[in-house]
Length: 101
Image 1 (cartoon, rainbow, N blue to C red):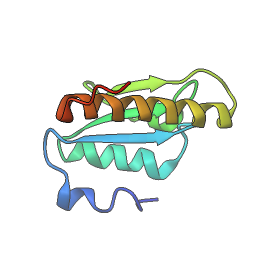
Image 2 (cartoon, rainbow, N blue to C red; image 1 turned 90 degrees about the vertical axis):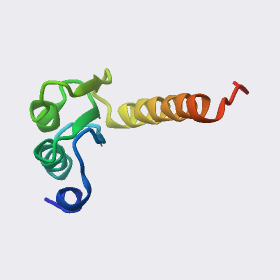
Image 3 (cartoon, helix red, strand yellow; image 1 turned 90 degrees about the horizontal axis):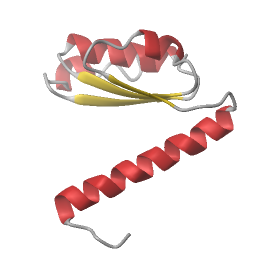
C-alpha cells in the first residue's frame, strides 16, 4: 500500500506537487501517497473518474481535483492521457517557447 508513498518522507518538500492518477480514485496506494505528500507540506493534483473515490476524499484544501466524466475506466484512462498531453504542451510552451501546435 505504501509503494508510491515510501520515497516522499525523504524527498518531498513544502511546495512540491504530486500528480496523482487513479481512474476509479480507489487505488489505496495512490491515496496513501497523497496523504504522505500532505504530511510533507506538499499539494496534490488528482486526476480521477466520476466521484474521485478514496483519493478524492483524501484531498486537502489547496489541492486540485480534476474529475473526468464517465464510468468506463477505459474512457477515463483515455481522458487522463489527453489531459497529461495538454500539460506537457503547456510546460513545453512555458519553458521552451514551443509554438508548433
